[in-house]
Amino acid sequence: MKNGWKLLAGIAMALVLSPQYAMADYKSDTDTGADRLDFIENRRRFIRENALTDEQKKLLEDAKHIKDTLRKPLDPTKPVPTVFEGDDLTYDQRTGEFVAKGKVHIVQMDAHQFDSEEEGVVQGNTIRGEIEIPGKAHMLQLTPDQSRITLDGYNTFYNYGEKTGTMDEAAGKVDHQYVTGKRFEFYPDHVVIYNGTSTKCNAKVPDYHIAAEKITIWPNDKMIMEKVKVCLKGKTVYTKDQMVQDLRPGAKGPEYPRVGYNSSDGVWIAQEFTYPLLPRVDGMVRPYYSSKHGARSRGELTWINADSSFRVAYGYYSDIDEHWVKREPSFIYKHERRIGTTPLHYVLDYEIGKWKRKQDNAADIESTHRYGRLGVYRDPIRLPGNWFLLLSGGYQITKETYDDSTRKGFDYTLATLKEFDKNWAAYGAFEYSVSNTTNSLFAYGVNDVAKAIKTGLSYRIGEHDRLVYGIQYDMENRTLKDIDYYWYHDVHCAQIILRYRAKRKSWQVRWEFIPW
Image (cartoon, rainbow, N blue to C red):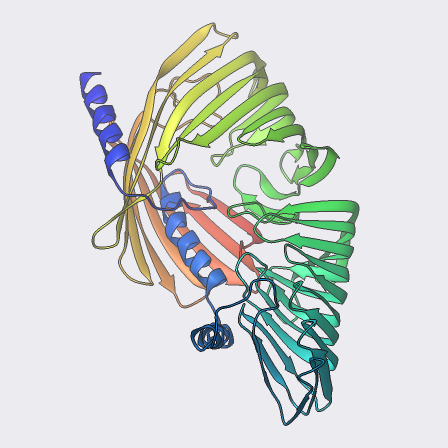
């Protein structure tokens, strides 16, 4: 164990002394460490989502030009300076009234832009800070601390002093959501859409969308939808009175079915339904059906407050190796927080509950399962040459009443990640865990082996396909534990993931909506 203490000390020094980088948002199913590559894929997704179009870049340049050419200091009590361009402009300096005919281009210094898309009349008042475009209009908004908006609609009114306005029969994009609506209302800190739709699918005919009587978007926070219809391929899957979607980085997407196949369960389908019950309290049910096992559903009651969550869980749960366990029920607590302003995070996990698993030709195993872990991880460290270093560690204790067993000790992970170019990436990792399938009563949720080396390679074929090769080497038994092959194929706004586990001669296929 002396070597383990030395290794942990080295990790601690690296955690404290190395520079900070952002953590990835979403994880893949794997036990060969291929999820390390999700950091790169998530980083690329983030860049794609936040990239500016040529039109948006031009707007920022124009807004900067207005600021740089001001003749006198800006008066914060008055509307921001605005430039009007049109075929025929009439302006009354005394009243502030203006009329513009033909195609009109309007740019404000706070990065608002309006264009009349049809020959017509645009009018407004510079003193009151008002713009009115009765016909078709194009709107851009890149104002700091407000939603990023690109919309085309009709009957536009905007007060650029109060930063409020309306638009009818519009379609476009608000932040990362592709939206349509009968009527839009704009406010400094949110956007409201009436009789509208929202989706993250950018196809001309979206694979999926949410329709609602009212949609309120709070940028980088949440989207509240009322009288909701969740639709696939234009067909209503289910309805809800209200749905709240988390828009913070890394949050889960909307509730749509997941379909897959694996050698153990056969064909399966699952879907989560979440229901707000009380402030900070949600209920969740997850119907699940497989061709080999039938129904294996579950439900949860969750309370979330700041950095902590408490769950009551009942029903069937499976991990990436198709190990099943039934909670009857379990009480689960989690607390996660950044340590001050450092790049370190600590995580406290605790669970107590009745666990049950079936055995072939033997009585079911039932046990009161107790698990606790205090862990620490660091934001990924960016090194020269486009290398990344990922570090984490912790101490855990697991107790079972079935066999009166106790397992306790450290776990830690050291992983490196290399992005060679836009197509090639590779990873390597060393993992140690005191709990694993060789010494645990329940195989669910634990590592296959105590000490493992995991490595792999990723290659992107064009825009829609990616191949991944991953291995897991058992250091204690000096054997190659796993060889996995993955094929990720994007279809419109969904993704098909094919996984072949060569050592186990098993297949997995999963279909799900991709997170961009």
